[in-house]
Structure formats: structure tokens, C-alpha cells
Image (cartoon, rainbow, N blue to C red; front, side):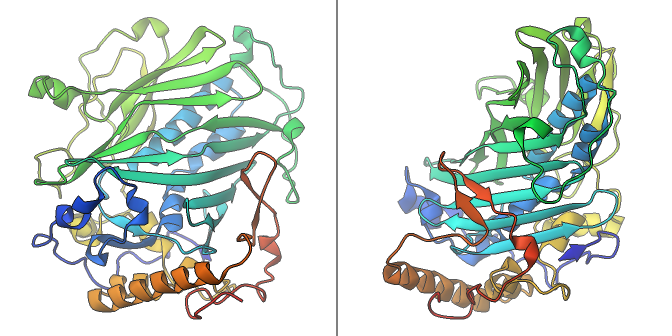
Length: 457
């Protein structure tokens, strides 16, 4: 449960199966216009992670939240928070494998140690519709969400939409000015309050920010290499003021020239507002980097420089999938680097092998690693043998176990007389699942043996 990336595993027991002889279209053609979350997909198209483990990958760059919570310059906080939201998109672009659907009542816990420590707790609280409840505690911040994925097949593409919102709460600094003037974006030079482990989510003690994940479009379902892009706009809102960050993902027309398509691919830009007034700007490549634009007059001005950040850019259409290509983002005269995607801890050999291992990063490798202490509840995703078999390259074993669990879940649903009650989250008056703060007591004797028995007790 306690994980340190410096000592965590760096590979899987076996590489993924070659999918060249398999057609994803032959599997999902009967689902045109329907919700794919209700369809069982052959394990050859899965990756050895449960969806609630995959959600934890949004924390790969949680250090941005730590920096946002500690900064005394509020405009910098906005840049750091928006960069964090961008970083959560970057983990998806190379990953064309589907995570396993969590069973109802399945849980996952990840306690990350090191420089960017956090404690992640999630539970699958509903099956139809599928809803995953998440709560994370970091250094002077908490992050929570109710995630309801909806995936539809439209003949040549798949659209995935994540219903529900993310709620970030950052420990306030005492006596912080709430003025709507420009000065409110300059400094918040106050003492931080102590972190309260009981319940630090009281409105009066926390700055609250919310946003929703944009939709993602997966291309080339019929033929060619699968690739995806995000679409739409992200509104990152400070709920206690008129301050917000509005990020617009550049869309491209299939009738545009190839050079225009390439220039716009994965690019975004946006502004930070105080009420209706622009007080900050930014741009970047959501597969690679985030730049603040320090002078608003430069927004439409392009320099002769392109992104010079190191790290690893997302894969590009029609290019060698094992090669990291330079980011082609054109900078402005006052562009200032805030974040970039980095796999610097991986060796050249590990980087070269990524296509054979689901494009996992060191962070992804550790998510399903077995841990010995402390004891995890029997509902934790790490106990799933279908995913463990897939890690080992045992497709038949994984398929058989996946089918057994699906049949078991159907039987449990038929026998259940009352509405399912989650163990670690409860539904509030707004219909949202809220964390109870009881998981940390580690009293797991009442947890069902979710992956071994035929019915819940």
C-alpha cells in the first residue's frame, strides 16, 4: 500500500499480447450508438489495471498541487492548478488499452511516499450506471470526485465522456484578501493552518476549485493505428469568488491542410479571469507541456522559438510509436515553462520497450504491484486474479477469471434485495458520494471476499 517510486517495480512479468491479428471493430460493431461500459470486451484489449487504479494515474504529477497549495502568489497558483489538470490528460494519449471494469464494492488504496506524497482511496459505489468515488489527501489539499464514464461507438470512432466533477480543496492561508482587484492576484502572505486529519474539508477553511474532464475521441476503429484526442473546454472554477481558468482545446477540421492539422494537434490555450477581466494567459501541448504567458500583450505574438522542454512528447500520428518527438509548440516572447511530461527516470531500454508493456510509465507499473504491509481489504483491486493473469501473459486464465467474476456479479445483483450501500462513501443530499473518513481505521473484518466467494455476505 505504501509505495515509493524509487524502489517500485519497473516492468511487468510478461509483455502484452500482439494484437495485430485481432480486430476491435469485430468486437464492438454490435454496440453502435450504445454505451460500451455495458459490454464485455475480450481481455486481449485490456490492460492489467482496474478503472479505479487507472484513475489514480491523474496523480502522477501531484507535486503541482503541492506547489499550488504552498505558493504565495495567486496567479502562480492558477497556473499550477491548470497545469495539473493538463497533466491528467497527458497520461491517456498513448494508452489505447481498456482498463478492467471494477466490480461493485471493489476498492483501491494507494499511499505514495517520497517528495510528492498522497493517500488515494476509491470505491466502485454503483454498477448501473458505473460510478467510481474517489478521495485523495495530499499536503494541505484534498481532491475528490464521482466519476461516471460513458463510452459510445459511432461507427468509425469511440467517444468517451466522464460525467461528474472534480473538487479540489486547498488549505486556506489566514486573512487572505478576497478583493476582486488585481491585488488579489499578487500575494497571499499569511500563515498556513495545521493539517487536520479528522475533516479538513470545511468550507470556511478551504479554497475550493472544481472542473470536469473533457470528452475524448478515439480514432481509427475500423483500420489504422488507434489514437485519441481530447475535445472541448475545461472551466476550472474557484467556487468562492469570480476567479476562474478557461482552457480551450484546439479542434481541427479534416478539411484543413496537413500542416494545419499537425500544428494544432494536442494544442490548447486559455485565460485566467477575475470576473470578466483577463488577468493571465497560457498555452501548451496537453501531451507534453504547459507555459504561462506572463504578458497578456504577447498572446497573439509568436516568437521564433519552439518548446525547448525536455521530457517526452506524446506520440504523433503516422510516426514511429517508439520514438519521442520534439514538441512543436511555438512560444510567445513571454512564455514561461510551468510543467512538462517527463520519463527521465526510465532507461533507454525501458523507453524502447514501452510499446510492448501498454505504454506504462514507472508510476503505472507500481499501481497493481503486490504489497505486504499493511494488510489491504479483500476488496482491493490488487486481489483480482484476472488482472494478475494478464500481467503474466496468461490470456486464457485471465479470460476465464474475468468471465467468472462477471457471472458472479450478475448473480449477486439478482440476490440483492436492498440498494447497495458502499463501505467507505455515503450519498449526500445532492446525490453525490462523499468520503466517510473511516477507511483509515483499517477495520476490514466486515469486507466481503469480493473476488473469491459467490455472493456478498
